[in-house]
Image 1 (cartoon, rainbow, N blue to C red):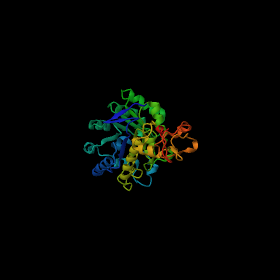
Image 2: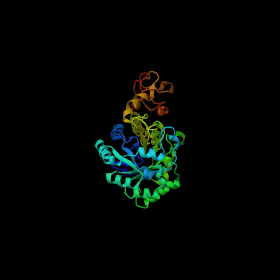
Image 3: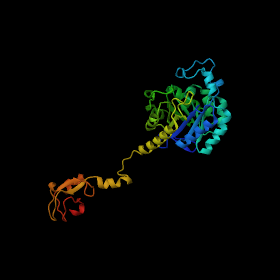
Image 4: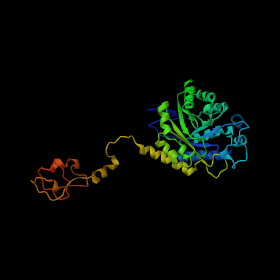
Length: 348
């Protein structure tokens, strides 16, 4: 079984509750009250953590970066200008972290530069998340790992060598609390690329928990990912898909987030422990009244030698089990057995 990783008070791994991250990303639209409302929505939905992103256009993109095709037609700005316009104001971070503590939900943010790592570490975040695009920035990942906190990292577009590079660089500084997340780096992501079976493969290959960062539309793939073995689910959410911004259109809305969390928790209960041990306490009435047992097909007087024709198999299950019918045939009735009576061992 893969090892477990502790994030705050939550143990993450097989046999533990799925760790659910509500990804606010840039959906705050540089509005502090909107950012706080996102925290409230995530809390009310029952998510374990709400996550933002901490970046600066100056250290993230060249000003010569071409526009992304999926954003064409929706935004007139070039890539650098767009990123600049949706940056999380860093002076908000303390207030947002405090608000999360007040609401009882974990505050996380993905750092995209060294200053962001330092700022988030000082805020006391219990874990770091690395975006798929940054998986090749091993110096930054090493710097993150040195903080000694769990590192979750998305693996969109990555192969096993690149994932192994992250494990090697983090382990080189003594950090083994790593959680790779299967991910498809498209917005929205087409369902057929989800490859949920890779979640179990990641756990088997690297011996750590693994999860799924979901960019598909709707919630069903995220719920299915937990069934497929995801110990962590990360999902973008928004107050409304009608809001303007690059991440709103593929994000889920508050009611969907609440439903997703509810369904994941129900799936957890439904998966059970895999052991078949007979009726549950709640099934006892059905077990007794709904199963068949041996009954008298006719009146059987005391002293009669019982034949097969005198017996039938009916509900309820108060009598001898059907599999023992051959043991009943040829025995003598010790008492009068009325038609439709359940035949019990003390009667023969």
